[in-house]
View: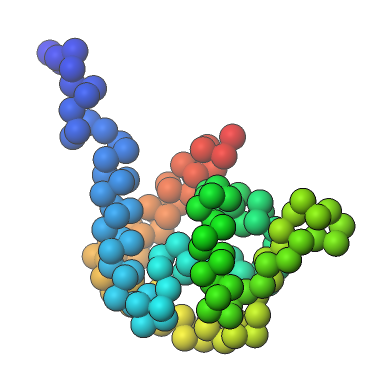
Length: 145
C-alpha cells in the first residue's frame, strides 16, 4: 500500500533525474568547452548563431528557453570576445538583433570535435540515445504550449 507521502520521495520524482543528468552532462562539457573559452550556455548560444547567423534576443531566448536577464550578460561577454554584434533593429528599435561575426563563425570549426567528445563520455547505445533524444524533445514541445 502506498504511503500518502510517497509522491514526495526523491526517488519518485521525474524532475530529479532530469536535473541530475543535466548537471552531469554540463559538467562533462566543461573540459571540452574550456579549450574554446566558452561556458555551456555560451556554447549553445553560438550553436544557434552558427545555424541562423542573425536573430533577435527574443528569438534566441525562445530557442534556448532563457530570459533576457540571463542572455544580456552572456551576449555582452560573447560580444567582448568578438563573436557577435548587438544592434537595435532598424525596423523596430525595441528589438535587439544579434549577428555572428567572422570570428564567431571561425570558432565553429574549432567546436566540431565537441559532439564526438561528449558522445564518448555517455554510455548509451545509439538506439538508447536516439530514444532519449526523441523523448526529451517531445517533452520540450509540451513545455512550450
